[in-house]
Image (cartoon, one colour):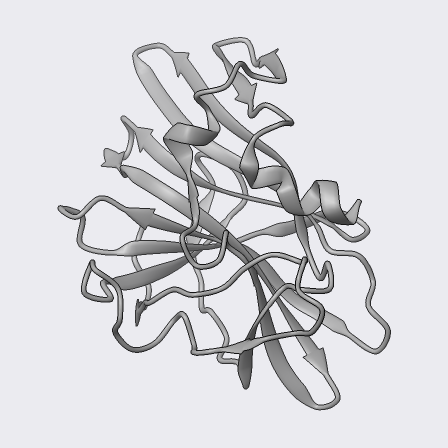
Length: 215
């Protein structure tokens, strides 16, 4: 996938258990992370082989998603092989319930990559049903050659509210959700795709804490 823009990235955000919305420092700007605030490249993810350069819009403020502005409904780890070509990916399904006065502008996933990679990934999604979005990240494919080692992830929604653009985060209090820990539990479902399968994360995984609190 062709890179578009690199965005300085640092993280610090969370779930919907606090009583009030908490404004936080912009996770997409400035330092403060052990990884040195490595830049993030923005893409639109429409499927494992349909990934396009994108622009992540600027926002007026960032907040923890304390009022169930979004929650992760499902997270899958997929593989597919055909004629010597292989692809692997993560796919995320995110609920964004209507909030009075809000206009949803974008929904996405931040993927923190391994230290030896040049940039992190900010992956914008598509609305596939009303108030229901899909995004993801392609981990590897043979044509064109591409590999990403994603360590952990967080999820966000951009909304316009009272003339301002706000970004709300679900991120395990800024620590993000470990991909290896999430898929260490037995899958909740395995769906064949003809050349591989998608393993869906166990519904008891910590990444679904916000879903359990909000749904």
